[in-house]
Structures are given as structure tokens and as C-alpha cells.
Image 1 (cartoon, helix red, strand yellow):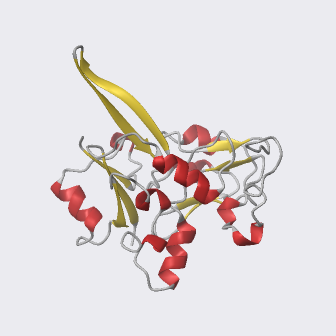
Image 2 (cartoon, helix red, strand yellow):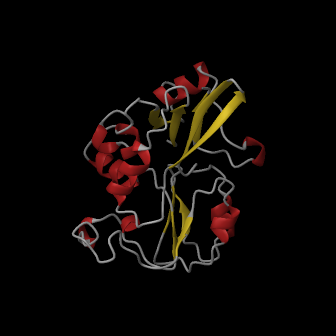
Length: 217
């Protein structure tokens, strides 16, 4: 299987619920977003429309970030998910520079939202996934909420169908603009949407083969 996300640009309202729930779910430090939403305008005055482009990590099939990592900290799983092992990361920043989608951020120093650690900041490490145990001087990024996926699969749940096994940004999207599933399954919902709605990927000419697809707005 290869996990993929489909984002319907016609449905996206730019509310940024994906960005905020992602931060809450993953204890993401200040100044870092795993889910960015860019807004832009198309057309000419007075016929101008505002559009939105959500950009999680693309979890490329051929990720440039994996190729340039000198320590093997950036790894790709068999299911296509790309993640960072903070214990191996030395913060060189090569992966940040190599990513054409600006999906990575170097966590330079430990920061808290209110100056001093709150109960949220102090949430026990033993209850966090490894990728939620941030370490200053390392690179961090979206993981498709792989802890939710793995936990769900171990319970016999289906990612993309059962909320407990699905990325948090997908289940919290207020307009249902996001769909998640197995792209290697021709009968999955993501495969159907890509085929029927002529899904496309960003910067396909680079040959990275992203796992995030967009439906025309």
C-alpha cells in the first residue's frame, strides 16, 4: 500500500482548521506549521476570486530530502510515509533546502507559546509518538499522523474510513475537502477521485511523485 491524500480545492475555504488541529494533535512548537495554507487571487479586476492552497508534506515516492540526508535521519517507510528520526538528525538543513515544497522546518531552539512551559508543553514524552518529541537543532515535518495510522491498523481499523486511524487534518476539515487512503488500491476513494476528477500534483515535472493530489478548484 501507499498512503495518499487528495485535497479538493473547490471545497477548501481557507479556514486553516487543518493547520490548527495539526498543531494541537502533534504538540507542534511556536513558529512551525506542518500544514500551511497559502491564499492567492486569480483573475483581473473586477472579476477577481480568492483561492487557497493547503500544503502538507507531499510524502514523495522519490523524496529529495531522503537522498541528501547525511545521517539517515530522514527515512521513507514501505507505505510511502517520510519521517525524521530526531535522534539521528544533526540539523544540517540539507533536507530543508532540497524540498521543493517548503514542507520542512529547522527547529532551532526550544520555545513555548507563553514564555514558560504550560501543561500542554509538559505533556509526558512517554505518551507522545517519537515524532512529537521535539529536539532543538533538528528538522521537523508532517508525518501523515503515522502514529494514528499505525495504532488504527493494529486495531483492525481502516485509515481514511475510521477517524481514529486517519490523519487529524482530514477528519477535522469542516468542508470535507480532504480524503485519505491507499493509492495502490484502484478501488479506493482516493484512486477514484484522482481518476474521475483529473487529479494533479504540484511540480510534477521534478519527478518526485508526491503522494498529495489536488482536485481542480
